[in-house]
Image (cartoon, rainbow, N blue to C red):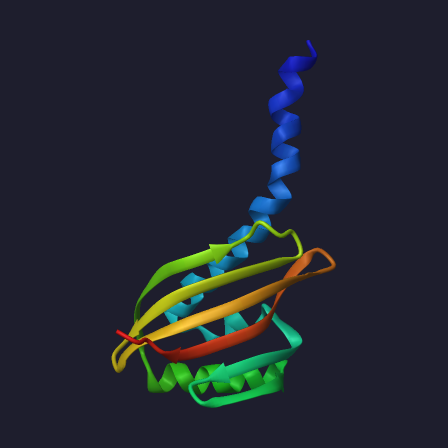
Amino acid sequence: MKLKRLPLLALLLILPAVLKADAIEKIAELFKQGNAQEIARFFAPSVDVSLMDNAAIYSKAQAAIILDKFFKENKPHAVKMLHRISSNPNYNFGVLVLSTDKGKFRVAYTLKEVGKNMELIELRIESEKT
C-alpha cells in the first residue's frame, strides 16, 4: 500500500529542483527573444555585469538599461545552450551562444536562490571566439 505513494513522494521531492532549473531555460529563451525587461525580473538588487570589456556592479535598473541597449545594437536570432549547472540547490549557472545580426556572443549567467526565487547575480557577455 505504501509503495503506491512512492512516485508521488519522489515527485514532490524533485519538483523544487526542477522549477529552479527552469530559470536557466527561461532566461535562455528570453535572450533569444531579446527581452531585456523580462530578463530584468530575474535580476538581484545589484548585478555584476561584464559586457565586452566593461565590467562593473550595477543596480537592477541600470543593468536592465545596459542589457536593453545591447539588444538594440544586436538583434538576437538564435540561442544554443552550451552548459548548465543546476546540481547545487542554491546556485545555478548557464552558458549559451547567442547568435545576433552582428555576430555570435557567449553569455554566462549565475543565479542564486534568495527566499524561494532564483535571482540573477552575475551576467557576462563577450564575443564568441571561433
